[in-house]
Length: 516
Image (cartoon, rainbow, N blue to C red; front, side, top):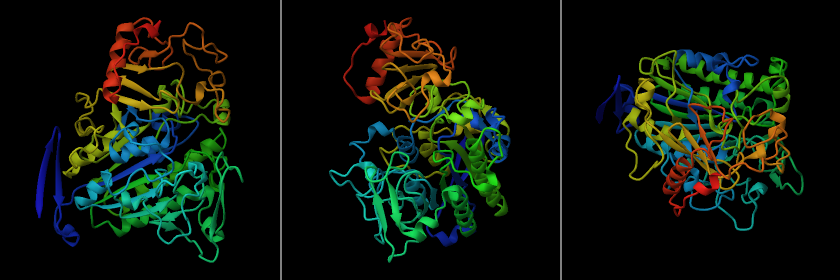
């Protein structure tokens, strides 16, 4: 056995490494790690960040007992790239080939789960996966989901191949087939005599995707309005079963992503419709997990993170009722603008992370991998997590110098990737690079409907003819990105464009003339 004492500014972390799991109770235990990520939750949806129309007492409790970050960002404004970066510590744009539904992480991919498991942790993943399953079959469109035999007793690669000991949750979003739970490597509650059938979107469209039929017991086991509740119960069971051993739990809630489906007991809790009710239901699921940690006597030795995978997609009913999910930020989910990438981020670790504090230091969701290794002493594989930086100094001393000064943001519309550098954001194209300025995306509210203000756009959402070809914002002076100052600072545009190309290893070019 090896007992390591790791010293960081302001905190002494004791990390234990075990040759045999059964000896864990005989040693000083390293901290448990619980990572909770909501789906499409904006900072304006959380009481601790100023929400008044929605009550989130359990998330607010975490903030009161821990650190609230005001400058935390996802490295992507849509879920799959963001979740890939959390688990691998690498930007999604590094993935070497197009995604067609195959599992993005497998036994060959370094992940935070595999690294912590190798260090002696029990690892569990609960909730939404959405990082693919199985391997690619040429010619099968990703949205069809028919590239796999979902009736097979073993379906892999999947979550377990990413380094988790156990899994329970939805293989995709709650609106994508198969509309069932998975347990480890198989469909949960599936009766072999009643197989599941996947229908593609050309056969039957459901929220833009196909659907699944048959498998009555499996479908009944995943009621749409209780997904997070059931998942939270599974997490509670995992905590109870592993309370005598260090564990890392990843909890991926499905709310408030569409379909907006609050359970009857949560309906009409708020005055802004089902969206607000659904967020309050999400908060109750968080409360179940926190209560289980307390009941097991583990709160003082458990680091809990609560965050979201990206900014909110604006819900029309809630917005019209006066609720602003992304506060005053420009844009929403899918966008390279701040509304797409800035997120709630709360860390609680009693005695290590100061309670009731805030930090404005730049934090990326990519940073979990490196930070988890710094906390536990786990050895990250050589060359892994190239875009992950330990935030432990900032978490333990919120006023410490920033651990990170730059990062990239992945949106959905080409050229997709923007750069944050210090207080500057450089976007190498016009518009949001997402749905907000794309009239083809009728499923989402557009610029003119959201009442946004940006110097490149008229109030009706049309791009001004003299708008620069690229965008530059100084967030220290203009956090809501009202004014594109690319024409004013062509040298800064050229500098940041070159830096973005260096990061992405693209040919160098000087776009200063495009900033006119």
